[in-house]
Image 1 (cartoon, rainbow, N blue to C red):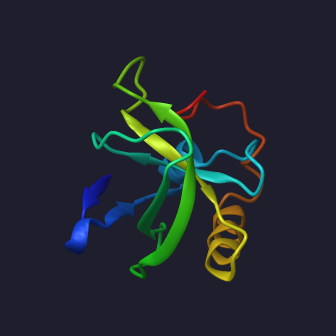
Image 2: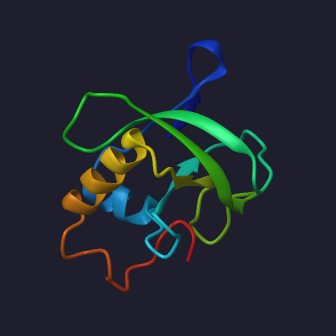
Image 3: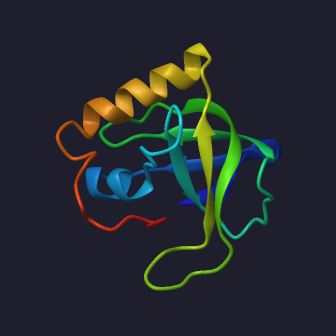
Length: 115
């Protein structure tokens, strides 16, 4: 769940692989992560978050552009937004780790927070 951290930086702790799967948008160029949040965003906004992936306590910095918005909770999908993962070193590290954790699941037909 995303929560405001110190200085207004959002934090996003993804607790398990199922939540990571539901949060990852593999169809977006370079991937994107869905961030459950009630904080309003607009498409194209640049947002900085600190994300914690499953089986890790390390907060990874991520700067990205908002590419998806669920303005309210509906059909079991939480309110929030998705950030496109950047092509910088930090973004590539996150993308590589997400895809390593989701190996063999990325093309699954399970529902996600966006589709």
